[in-house]
Each structure stands twice: as structure tokens, then as C-alpha cells.
Amino acid sequence: MRTEVQNTEPIHPQVSRRTAVQAGAIGLLGLGMNHRAALAEASPNGRGPSGTAKSCIFIFLSGGLAQHESFDMKPDAPDTVRGEFQPISTETPGLQICEHLPELAKRSQLWSLCRSITHSSNEHSAGHHIMLTGRSDLPTGFNPSKPLPTDHPAIASIVGELTTPRNNLPPAVVLPERLVHRTGRVIPGAFGGQMGPQRDPWFVNASPFHTKSYGAYPDYAFDHQERGGSDNRVFQAPNLTLPHGLTQSKFARRTDLLASLEQQRRSLEQHAETQDFDRFRQGAISLLSEPSIQHAFDVTGADAETQDRYGRNAFGWSLLMARRLVASGVNLVQVNLGNNETWDTHGNAFPHLKDKLFPPTDRAVSALLDDLKESGQLDETLVVIASEFGRTPKISLLANAYELPGRDHWGAVQSVLFAGGGMPGGAVVGSSDAHGGYPEESPHTPEDFAATIYHALGIPSVAAWKNALDRPHHVYHGDPIFA
Image (cartoon, rainbow, N blue to C red; front, side, top):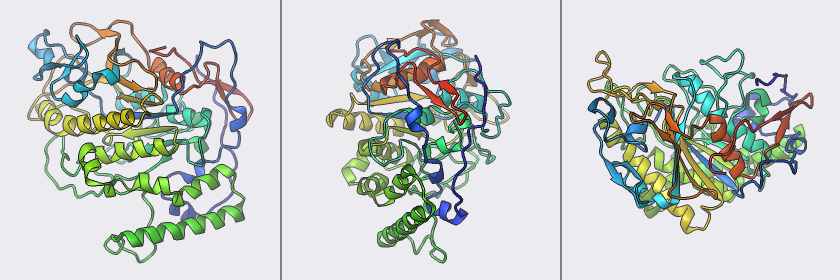
């Protein structure tokens, strides 16, 4: 049933654009949460005890991961379906995944799969909105070209609102970039929507936008259509503005960076006092001088052994940053491994997956799981990997754009990985049919996917957020997959 949309935008203190930008172009002014006390209400009549995870790392593969080439291979299907890759056995008897994910295969006792997530959209923006919000229905007036205040709220926004803050840090973070189409339009789904912009997650913009280059730069950057062109991006976080007259070359020295951070921190704290920001905004401002956050951001300065394990690239640095942020007390970190269309393998799919996408992903995710397990934090940290949709059973060639074949968009089924957070290891829930086109057993919805995250994080099944008119909006619209 579609929720009635009300105006939820509160009145904020006025602040100059310059001061807002100095906060790092990270949505700082959207962190005030004055209504939190009234938002989460539990009842003894819920679905049962919720999970005990403290945090979630939501790895989002924008563009659409091909299930046939990753976690749901069909080696016995016709050659027009099964593809070029071979399955390999994992450490879990009877469970096979793609040969180009060997490190994850070695760690299968740490993760489980749902091979039957399904929804009805084959369109990128709609698929993003569906999977990032956990709502299969599109809101009235949905615009695929931009986020709207009538959109459903993101999973990140709901988790940020309904989980207990562990310190002054923002409860929900998205990194290393907003999902932006190559044309420059912002993809909807990752924002507060009906909850209001003050409930947007905190966006850490560490990865500069590029219109024709995707993937884990510098070593794994590529273009789907192989049009050539350079990619000289530098991974840097947080994306703070430079003082007037200070160029990138002058800003290279670490001492300049730290001095600039300290100056901005003092300015923002003074502004917070004069403008009477609430304690959540002041907490967000104070993170500029929080040592653990400075450490979390400084991923390119991590020791050589750590960088080698995660990978010295945008994927490795992003997951290292996420791991450090949850260790510092952030409740949910959404990690976009590549910008919009990075995993959109319409063509040249097999060489790009084999050589450009799977190697840095396999390495970085495996390093993340190892770190969480060795630190004893895997049970209290849920890790999920999902896309906006899967890809078609039939391989096709768009000869006007690509030299080699691939697969098109397919919302009917995708595979999603879950690890930690109390989830069982080495399990498979649901299955797809013989060609990997539709769920065959135990179909699950995006609502179930979202409920799995909420449940693991201890959000009660009857929890709701309330808008400015005190109208409750319940957050569960499905059942946890592994409950």
C-alpha cells in the first residue's frame, strides 16, 4: 500500500553557502535529527527478537552484477546462456561460484547467498530506487533523472534514523561518491526522500566524477565501449574545499591538509555556537578533528601491508574506509564500488569482468571479511553486496556499440551476498530456474532485502519514523530473509 506523502521538510537555521561548502560538500546541514526520540517505537507483538549487529556495510554494485558470471552460474545451460566463465568449488560443499572470485570462494564459510531477489524493473534509475530504498513500488511522480522529496527514503536514511548513535558521528554514510549518470544527472534512491533532506545520509565525496571511465582506478580503470581517453583521478577524502589561492599542487603536502582541516573545524564550531545548531550538527562538525575519523579518511596513507591486502585502488580504499568508519562508530556505510554504469556489462562483459571488475572486488571484499573476523567484529557487522538488478539469461551483442557480447538489464532475479551480522555462513536461500532468468524456489523481494538489514541491526519489526505532522511511517514492508 502506498504511503501518503506529507511535507516533512523542517525549518533550518540560515547558514551561508560558503560555510556549508567548507563542511566538505558532504551534506553536513542534513544531519540535524531533532525528532529522533519519537521515531523508533517497539511493541512486544513483533516478529521476534531482532539481531544484535551494531553496523552494516552495504556494498552496492551500480550497473547490475550478472548473476551468471558471479554467484549463480549455469554450467549446464545452453552456450547462449552459460557464458565463458567456469564455476569453482568453494569451501562449502556443493556451493560453487565464478572462477574469477577465488578469494571469496576460500571464505565461503563467512558468507551466504540469496539467489532469488526479484523485482519488476529493468531500468537503471528505477532499479536503484527500488534496491536502495527496499521498496518495489515507485512513488507517485517518480523521476528517473533526479531525486525528489516524494521518493521513498533510502535504507541508509532509515537506518540512520532508527538506530542508536554510538557517538557524535553521523549514523549513516555513503562513499566514495554519489551515484551520478555519465550525463551528470544524479541517480535517485540514496536520499531521505519523504523523510526530508535532513535525513539524507552523509556523503563523503572521495572519488572525482568521470564521464567515460569506470572501475577501480588507477590500475583497473576502463571504459565499457573502449573509446580511449585518460583517467587521472586521485582518490582523496573528505572532499573539502580549498582556501582561496591554495591550488592542488600547493595542497599536496600533508601539513597543509591538516592545517586547513583545523582551520575549518574552528570556523565551523564558532559558527555552530552563533547559529545554535543542535547537538547532532555540532557532533558532525566535531568529527573534522576526531582522530579516529582522520584515521578512517587517510586510507591512501595506510601502511603498505594493509593497502596491498585491500588493493591500492578506488575499490580497496573505499572498503578500507568503510571498515574504519564502522569501527569508529558509524552504523551504516553504503559503499558504491564504481559509479553508475560501472557494472553495466552490455558488451565486452567477459574481459571487463575478468580483468577489471572481479580482481579488485574479490581482493577488497575478502580483505574486509578477514579484518572483521580477525578483530572479532564480524558477528556485529553485517556486510551485504547487491545491485539494482541482475542481467538477462541470454547473451547478446550490441554490435553498434561493443566489439564483444554481454547481457542486458534484468530485474526478475539477482543474487545477493550476506556476511556477518549474525548471518549463517555457507548457506544458500532461494534458487533461480535452469537459465537463471526467474526465481524457482523461495522468491524474495527488495522489501525482504531491506528487512534483513533492519532486523540484523536490531530495528524492531513495528518501528516507524514520524513526519512533521506526527504521522507514523512503518519501515518494515517485508520479512527478513535469514530470520
